[in-house]
Length: 127
Image 1 (tube, helix red, strand yellow):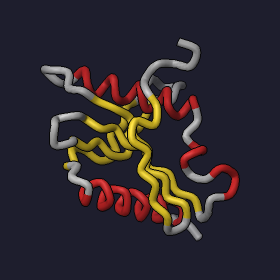
Image 2 (cartoon, one colour; image 1 turned 120 degrees about the vertical axis):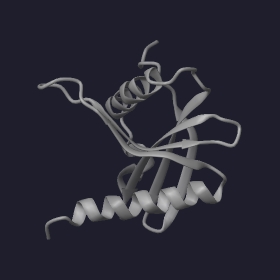
Image 3 (tube, one colour; image 1 turned 90 degrees about the vertical axis):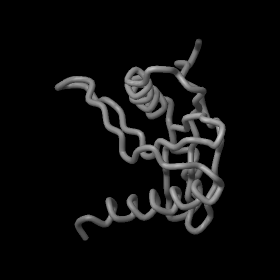
């Protein structure tokens, strides 16, 4: 059925947003997209949130019907992390002052929501 994957992703993102807001984070931006070039993928950040202390939180939302094959959290590959870091650098370049920031993942496996704070950093593997 067309749109099923998109609508499932939208539901997961709404659930993640609700979860983060219940824990005191404020929404800054949804679906921040950056193009790298005509033949190269840029990056997208599902949610940009702000902690009460001013920390900017770049959030990747992943969902799976269940926890098989490593679950939703395991699906955030090194390549995906690089794309998120690229988009985050672009976002931060537009700010006058660099705030503290981190990368979180909200993984949804079935009905279970797992919030992985500081799930990865912006360094490329091997640094």
